[in-house]
Length: 441
Image 1 (cartoon, one colour):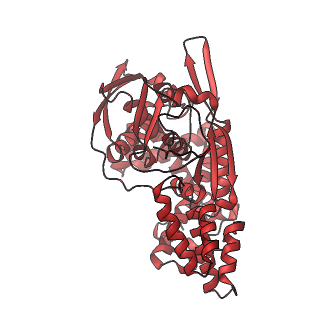
Image 2 (tube, one colour; image 1 turned 135 degrees about the vertical axis):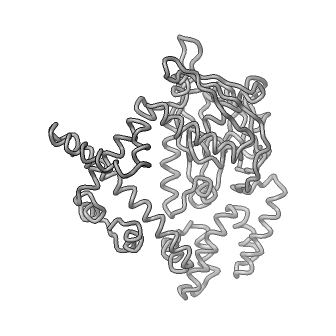
Image 3 (cartoon, one colour; image 1 turned 60 degrees about the vertical axis):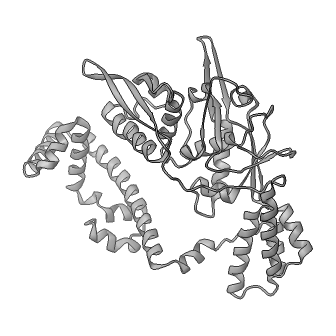
């Protein structure tokens, strides 16, 4: 787990076998976090040593944390700041019997040390009984099992089933499971949607990425599913690449290797040995390497007369490369540019789809009965020559409503992509070829 040291804080060191150890009451507490928030919390828990008697401030490299949380742009400081604020205000709820309920925030503080590229986080003291000196009633697993999961419900279901791995089965009423997952009343309200978008997604992710897999049996009353019994099986975790978010630890021999490497690099770039050694001890390796990349880019563009001096100032003062994104775009391969354009296109279509759905629903709601009947008749007629679509519609009322909405929108040019772009001021010019290929124009 975390590296032992006499430091007043603990620095992140994450590897495949880092253990997340938490009281079962945390596993069964009511809370709802995003995937990124859960990854950060589980990383912090894995940094706790089994002999710790109190929480320490935990330090994590911001640049590495951004990779862990899939934050790829230059705005990750703001996003990590927002995430930390949520964890300071976001509470988890413990119930002890019928008359006691504890609500506590995950974090008590978050501090940014921008000059070193480090964020320092500390757990709320009220969480001590649930994370420190655990001897019984706890669940433990390797951090890598959850760090690769991409759906928040998958992480929660993994923990709830991992707790019962040795038993091999766990039963929940649908009401209780939804309560633990903190699902809103309208969220996957129909069990068919809950099965498809929660259970099946989690089943696939856990089987592919973790050390357990599961199937389930549905318990029904009057043709309605009222409970689920999970059947849990252990498995060898599929090979997973280590996600390295190490931060140098002065008590660890690995720091010597890191400092030697970074000192040598700085000296090669013209920094004096004494200054290089001071910088290596004072600043994180990732912070220094980030500034080296920045200075080298500036040097290639002929903007620096004294690269070594500018590098020292960049490290000490935390200079930011504000043109990194533009520079990367200029040097990207045709394949990388094509992939970036496709991602932007998919994001743009999602916005258009949400707009069209909202407009269509409002239109349908405003139709008088006679007009609504005409639209429904036209929709039924359109199904006559499309057996696959007809079967899809017949499966559920939700499918029928969705396909009817698509039909209504498709009959109106004012709901088209060009009209949406004009209405919201979106630029379609980079995506015209893709739009034509997909028949959106």
